[in-house]
Length: 159
Image 1 (tube, rainbow, N blue to C red):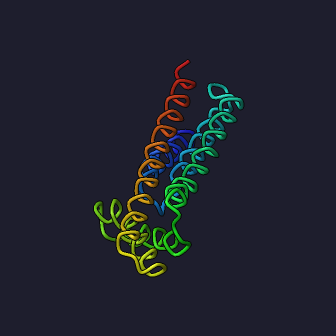
Image 2: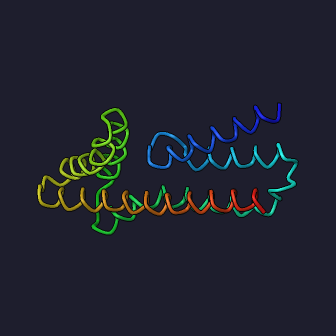
């Protein structure tokens, strides 16, 4: 049974790693769940609770980054609420349109949302790019956090 539980933990961590860049999958949360399961399976012998507390804090920081990144990019250029909603809709549509959709649909959605609010094509483009850059920066920070989490987890297992 221990082997099956470790396999589930590894699968959760792997899906979580992929979910870090796929917006609809709660990547960091799944990774953390897999790490908690791994620690529990091992009766917290190699991965003590204090390591899980650190991993939990990193998970919370990744959540905050995820929610704040696009909003901060949009707010920096004074985007309307429609632009933020457009970016969210663009992100959801991007999931179904492949890699390019994931990369560029938030930009398109934010630009369309801003254009519908202000009827200014230049401003819509500026807001779309700022929102998109916020999303990319947020994703880069999340990836860094995720790899730090993996390093801490694996380090605790090996020590």
